[in-house]
Image 1 (tube, rainbow, N blue to C red):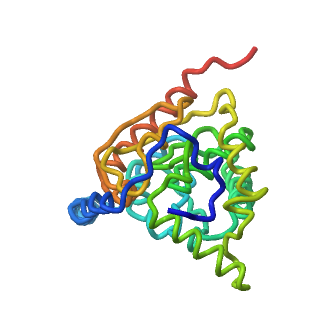
Image 2: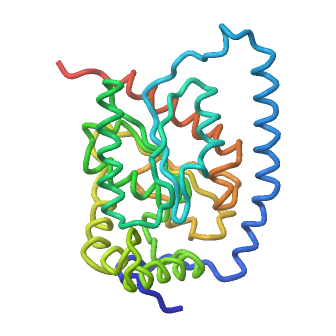
Image 3: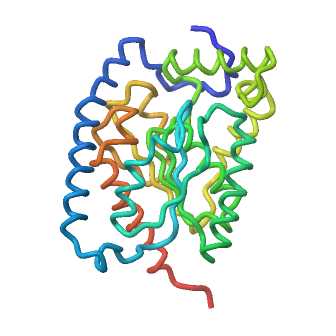
Length: 274
């Protein structure tokens, strides 16, 4: 299927999901059910906990959450709630809908990182879903002075151009709307020009020393090639979830908590330079 994305975003060795792969995303129904049950259980526990004991001990560094393509911060609320209940201080990306210029969003997130790091006087961990994870990968390369670790969830960093035709069509529509004069949308440069090239090259650079990197992925992903989500430079964690479910299933959220703690433990164990 033809689309506006540059050929270098679809290297050989990766497979584009077929149209029927969307059926995998039907798993979002039970995933949503688990999320609802987890939220209800959390509310019951909170009501049963004395007010003075409700604030968990802070665990590690602040965490910036970045949503995926076409999505906004609201899609990561359930994940944020789980992280906060485990002591992590979370921050929204301030992205209402991730449809803008890639490098523009990346620059905005860099400023967001600077503000959080300055306020908390420490580095930040970045957790990104889908396109959000790809942005996190670029931020880690560009600003290792601000980023101590990243976790990506269903982020096709190795071949974004092989994503499901539905996603590629949506990107093409955004480009057409931008060409027609609609402001604030990704344009041709973002999918085939200098912006796309810069984002791609940045995502393929080696991870800076000392920056943790975990890729969470699933064979049940119906929107991207699972193999495109596994960066050779990362610690790879396979879970059972749909692409959408990676952002809402509490089992994935528990995995994120475990990986954040593991990254924290690595930082604590790392000897300091004399």
